[in-house]
Length: 184
Image (cartoon, rainbow, N blue to C red; front, side, top):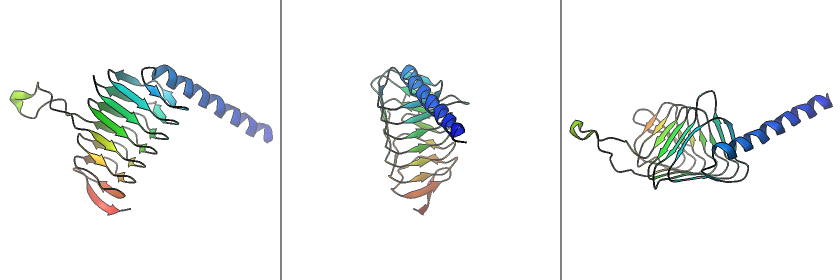
């Protein structure tokens, strides 16, 4: 029994080692903290600054994780944050994800709408507005966080929600558009 446990520990250590090496390879254009781990092969487009804190974990399988930073933009991911597969995060100006955040699969976070609403101006790009996720935020599966939003520390965004306004600290929000459902 002890040899089986030793084998499991060895496999886990090898898997974590590979994940660290994979992060260094795929995120070579980023400022990486210590112990960043990556499973799978993400799509990374970095024309600005991509900062990833210590012990961040990212999954890019079975669905690909996309991290995009436009010219002059900043995408900052705080330490010990977990980002699940299929997420698309696009920073044209600023997206700051605090420490200890949990981001579910297929979440979209973007600081720009990438086109105007007016049909005559659809080829124009509107100004970007920063997106801030404060510390210890949990974003549920398939939620969307749009430009100009701050999600307060300790808050939870329910699965499938679309967040278009600031979220106070320590609340649960949900719906389309998201509204406060209860305090935490």
